[in-house]
Length: 640
Image 1 (tube, helix red, strand yellow):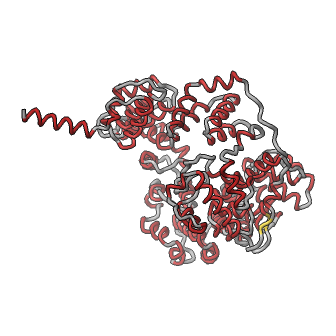
Image 2 (tube, rainbow, N blue to C red; image 1 turned 60 degrees about the vertical axis):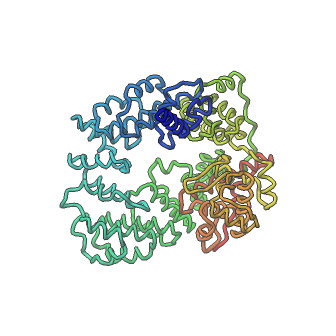
Image 3 (cartoon, helix red, strand yellow; image 1 turned 30 degrees about the horizontal axis):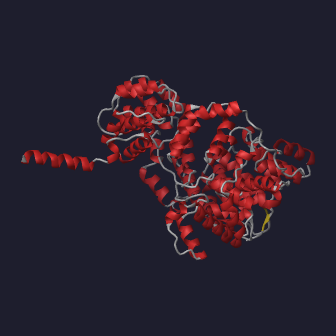
């Protein structure tokens, strides 16, 4: 009896340790239990849940999460089940993702034959997966993959382990040329946080490569590295490249200090390397809004430069309103870059400023009429305000019913209903990859009906930029947002322009840096604003409450506007990048608002402000029913 009693105690203990839902999970509860088991790596629970079956639209997810977690563990994967899942759900987003996970596991295990067999069918292989495939082929004796890799090597991300291994193979096989290696080195050094430098340079012959000590000294203190060089230092290409790399690093923080050292050392460089040095100086000086940027770019002569640097050559000239230099820089672009809407617009402005009215009008007509930043500015320049768009065209009941009954769309909606937003978004995007426009618009309207505003906007946006404004420029939560906007004296169209760009009206949106909710308020900002307005019960978790988030967000917008001349362009830049930066980006003289926006140094903030201000024009037209001018909203930015 004692022994039996002991077993009962043990059994009861095991039972108590097992979650109640794990014994008889059904319906949504079972799906959420499986998702939580995946999050915690609870393979035992996943085994138990996957062994059963319960009718549910998301049943396949239980099987998928079970196999996905198994692939991440040390024990051998169940190949038969994986193959069965891939066959049963062929063509689905889950089959594609499971295949990717299986390929990674096969590569990790060194099962190259298995990898080759499982390769086919990936919709969009990542760089890491492509590198794994080339390695797998090399491992089984097929070296043609190295030629394919070498052809695209300069554009490959080297962050994946497989790509790191691939570089060594390419170098050993003599597939990398020094010019390609140094070009990749320059590209990496152009980033603000260069990495993989040793890996990139490992493809050079030992006699041509810089030493580890030289590379470390250049990276650790580029200013000191340059100061220790003497005229005539360039004994080999590596010396010139490290000097230019150090110059570029120093120019990020202090272009003038970099130029002083360049002037002392540039005689040792070839004419081409000297021109490249001037490009580096001009690029960073343009981002710092220094007038010297125009002169330094001009000193580079006709050197071919990457699109990013050429764009900043134009921006440097714009900042000085040197319209001749603007025209010269745009005409020096590649045909593809010159054909972009931004540069077509600014070329038109340059032609106009230089008295070429006929050419200017022709260029403006190519851009005008599109409901975006440059299209609106071009229309303004032609004397055509943005008029209220027509109502969205109705869809047939048959099309709407077909979308509502579509199993993939229903599965995505079921995931959204369970607050599995990432999974729902993947299913949604996958289903709409090859859908026609009618299906997409019907799906967008269904998303709107379901309150999934980001899917409604993004789906309609992918169809026709001239249509469906009612779907693309939604005004949800207006009864919540409008009173806060009015209380703060804010333009409601501008507030909605910010909201649309910040969160797409997802109340629980969270950015990688921690911004929260509808207005993407940072926790520290929320705490600071709460104190400013006398909110005594603020907690970080309240940023997920729409009312609190909008109260704090609109209050912060008012504070930023008050600090930045009540100018919406400056305030939009300040909301994204901080008010201090928005102030520093002003000039010493009055500046056209469009030029201020075009010369914002941060790509993210520059694009953000363009979209917010264009959003505001469209929202104002929809709300007021009156023509609107983007140029008038941008106005002019006062000197610092």
